[in-house]
Length: 576
Image (cartoon, rainbow, N blue to C red):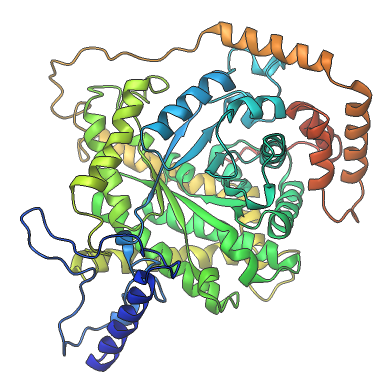
């Protein structure tokens, strides 16, 4: 139990952090924001609230104050008073030129960062003219075949000045190399680039199914990327551990929380197995969560995630610096919660989900568009999605107080319950790998994850949760407005964005021209060098040789195919 003296000492520590962050010129989070905040009626607001003086609060050390371990209430003493979350809208469709126009619209309308959606061929490491790409080019994201496409994608957008997130895992490393080369061709200093690459291959085997190779080669590439970014692009986060796709596949909130953090622990073990300093590489790990429609459960999930991660990083992995204990995360509102029926209701769902992410302390946020169950967002629906965040930020007062729900009996009980359930799942995962006492190539959590992938445990757990939810829906135990409740409507069809087949034909024409114009001998040599490096287990790092292939204008399919000659392919086992 936290006694009154401990609580008072914690408040004093918070106040010192807050004052330090507010000092002009300190570089602290929040030094530029106005000090006084009030409600819309003029009532003054404190930057944080906690127990009254002299109170005894059982378990308060697990709640604490914003900006200190275990970070249940957020990473920063100032909360959003210091700096609001980054508005980072996910976008990509058609070809690079079309998506570049959308990016400029987002930035000119107040977006704070970019998030790239790639089309299915790119996500699977295929060029746009591959037979498997037929009919898919540009449909669920932007087509990127080479560094030349990446140049067009970010034309007139200075990469050294903006943060970019790229949601891609299987071929993430070659795509990242294309991003670096595009920045080089802008004349940028690539060492200052800032952003996030997803690269999370574990969640592909668990939920999304966009892998290229067996797990071990992917982990080799990810380890190389962690080393390369730490040495050469220190501000860029090489891994965004994704719970979003796990949740969208049908997982519960507790499963999303536990599977995602376990994946993160696996990548920490990978870094440690490479001899990296946890205090240096851990700040390069970030997370990506789903904000679903159960408002308070989502808030509790985000708070529990920070607390679990901080404790494991300190106590299990030896991280003794705060930044290495921080769980920074991006949130996207739940695509699976949107309905094709009465699609304008999706604006309300998205706003509620976005508010849960904000009250849970997200660091950046994407809000889905109302028409995304039907097609890619139109410019109009994309603007509404963007304005949803801006209304939350500018009009609702949620930025005025750090963790305003901290201490709520309900929210704290939900936070504790989700944490406890996640810990039970961690024990199960570690046990599948033989436990901490067994021999492990990388680490016990990694061994458990690989075993769970191999025996189908993760997918079966998610499938069972999805089945139970669907049963509840069909029995009317769960209600969705417009689907099985309040189905009468005056709404008609909404305008949708359609991708013309001309996009695919034009992309392939340009790709063929680029192949004709490039130095074929240089490409052949670069790919041969890459294959030799892949086959050399003593090769210290594959990133420089992949960069050489990208600079020669080797395509994504050529690079991924070359590595696949040695790495092989992966086929998921059927599990009955």
